[in-house]
Image (cartoon, rainbow, N blue to C red):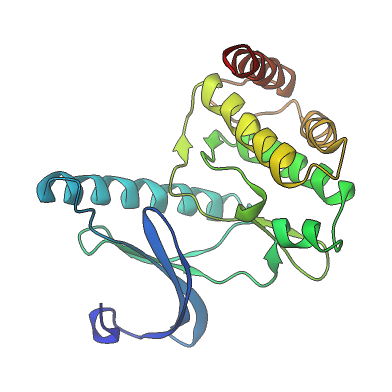
Length: 224
């Protein structure tokens, strides 16, 4: 990929190389931005790979645009080319919550706020799909912004909502075990943010989602 491939894009440096996409910092039309480029996968047939790339990028763009309309704390959608395999979003100032928890700049208060943010996401009928402390940015004022919607779903079933909490449960217990009540604090934040006025198609309460999360957690423990 060259800079000329995307008009007005000036590449700076690679931020992250993931399993499905590479994130690159830079600027677009004078503003700080992040380019996410989905790389071809050699283990997939080329036509299937192109189809999956188009579908996933289109879905990610829809989710980000929806959150933008809702004024949800997430990156802004700047541009997307599903055929070209890339999406441009605004860059968020701050550091991953993972780093802030590891170095002591954040604690249970921020984990509680993360739980509240997840409930707000779910009430707006979206499941994230990869909820970890790497995928939420905390700025110098303690504000949280959710990022990386490559696996997100609109109008999810309750299982996907419960799985969101389970993925974060696994992250908290594995990476932030020094916070003994981290999971309970996250769940408390999730329950406390239930407005009772969900716009979701399913209209599922926070309590119902937490009950499904506990059922999923129980299945995981049983099979382990």
